[in-house]
Length: 94
Image (cartoon, rainbow, N blue to C red):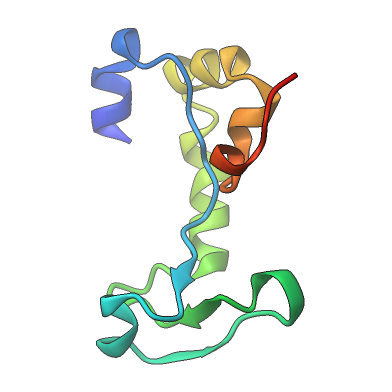
């Protein structure tokens, strides 16, 4: 958060999506993991973060602190809707 606020003048867009751990990523071997979802997201694993930053903790931080900071809120207002998805690189803008 401090980095983002400090450099907010140089940041055009933010993607505040929660990290998904790829099934075959090297980090998956070092963490306690489990099934994430069926279907489209089956290429990811859920995991226990060693510092306690589970998905619920990250969501709370993003919504209650990070996104509410005035400098960060200003960046988020400028971020195009397509940029808010983890999978944005796979979409084609028309």
